[in-house]
Every structure is written in structure tokens, then in C-alpha cells.
Image (cartoon, rainbow, N blue to C red; front, side, top):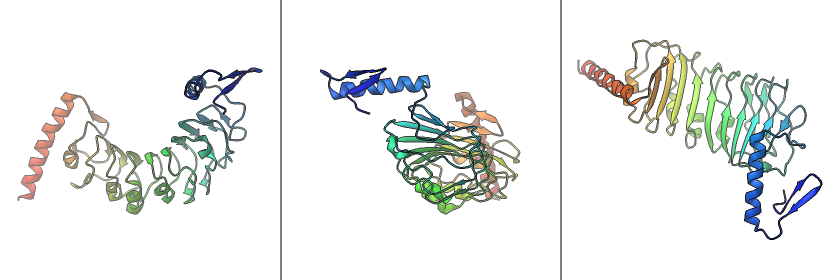
Length: 286
């Protein structure tokens, strides 16, 4: 897009007498208004039945069996959202997001919920490896974390709920660890605590639901020094697992949907933790 002129109907608004910075500010403001209004662009970088706004590629609920072939664009945005949920996708091939980098997006959110995905080529994200990425992969068919995720050097958020995960590879989580801040997964098909998760040492949010085991090991949350929000649910009973009490920076805790968040609730949590850890210490010293 030429920053010195914009088409309005059949006329051209020229940038005479105005600095390039002022015109750039004008165009970015106009783009933000277009985006918030959800204006559909005439030219979309994805083929029919997809549509595009300035910062969204809309391909949801379109009966797609393959990721659409994206074409280069001259429409730039800082934040791009690609909507691909509720389709029939099964595999992400190499270069699935080729040309997405022509948007110059610094942050990319990709929504894949409610597909049939079970496999990713190791180069599925070639071209967007250095963007800040949020991946929504809920309700698919992955049995493990795809190795392709390790190619995303700035993957910040990963949602894997409602996938039949049977293994969390510690090598994959180690490679994702430097950037990942938010991770959520269902553990219904796991038989024990997934220690591969403990390699994600920079998480601020961790959600592990539907755990089938009745007890959590004392070292379940070792390494999570930056964790501020934890949501867990499962077959374990007896209230707060003792392992939670080793998390010193928690501000929000949800255990089987019982939440501790307010100041008074956190005071109660600290009291319970002191009691639990006292019982643990007494047991160890027996």
C-alpha cells in the first residue's frame, strides 16, 4: 500500500504537505477502523470460500479438507488471526502457511479447533517461525505434541485440550520452553504425571484437566517458578494436592473447579498449604 495515497471511490487522497509519518499514522488508523468494523476486503490471500478483513483470514466452517493455499499480499497488519476451526483438516503439510509472512504480522493467532488433525509436517510453519504465535488446537486427534511446534521460536500460547494425548515428549517441551507462556492440555489418556510438562519453565499459565490418576507426586510442579495461574482437574480427591503448595508465585488456582483468586481465598490457600506441608514433613520424618 502506498503510504502517500489512498483510493476513496474513484478519487485519490494525496499526501502533499503532510509528512510520511502523518500519512502512515492516518493509514494505520483507517486500517484499525476497517478491522474493527469487520470490512471484507475485495482481494483475499486465501481462495474461496475464505474471506479476509485487514487482520483476519476467515476460513471457518467451510468443509475444508486441506489448508488453503495462501497468496502474497500487500495488506500489512501487526496482528493477524487465521480462522480454520470446524473444518475437516487431517494433516498440516510442509509450507502450509507460505506467504503469510507477506502480511508482516508480528503476532499470529491460528485457530484449528474442531478439526480432525493428527499430523503436522516438521516444516508446517515454515515462513512464520519468528512470529509471536498463539495456536488453538483444541478438539483434534493428536496423541502427542507435534515436533513441528519446536520450529516456532516464539510460540507463546498452546491450547491442546480435547486431544487424545498419550505422551508429552520432554525433548519437544524442552525446545518449546524458552518462549511458551501459556499451555493447556487434557490428560485423560495419560497413566501418570507427564513430567515432560516440567520442562516448560517459563509458563505463567498451566491448565491440565481430566487427569485419571488419584494422586499427584510431590514434585509435580517442580521448575514452575514463574507460574501465576494453575488450573487442574481429575480423579484426585481430598482438595488441594500438596504439590501445589510449592508454587510460590500463584495468584489464581483452580482445583476441580474450586477457585482461589481473591485475597481472602489466597489467605485460606496459604493456611491449608501450611497444614499440608506440616503433615508431609511429619510423614517424611517417621
